[in-house]
Length: 207
Image (tube, rainbow, N blue to C red; front, side, top):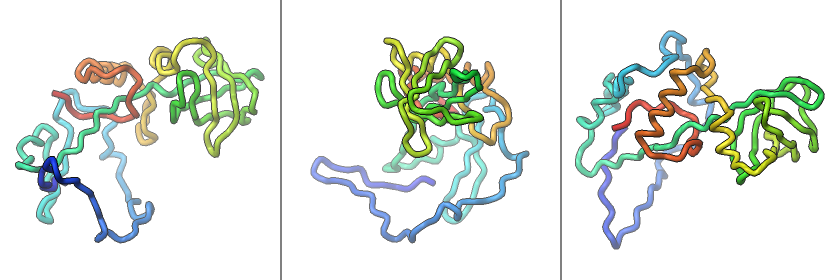
């Protein structure tokens, strides 16, 4: 939904205060979405993604390329220029058991918080080998996440870019393929962002 917003002046501070909204619960956003309506791949043509235009109590089906026709003077646009981190890694524990790691947060050059899926959770001090070449130490656990350290001198983001795989949402039924990788790499060239600096998501259009 596009809302007109006066442009701030040099002497004015702008605060967004939503006192009129009641408390909300996440279960209020639960709804049925038929699988046939979930796109499994982005459209081949940029700007062809569907766009729902909400205005004056009406709902209009549009295309993302129509956005510039809908913007009015003094509208406020919030742009998300994040990109996908190749945050999923597969490997094994010292015992030989298989593990899947999904990096949720990068804490520094060598440490991350991650989800770890395994038949038996790894313990603090345990070692993982990911993508056949990455040595990882389990430092401990913080709630549902595992605190991991990637051994070596390279920045963890560079390691993920080279050895990781794109994580796709759970409603996408296929594993990340060459088309997904190519789309993300094209976004990198369009946006001039450092690889590994964005969060997971498909974007519809650049340019």
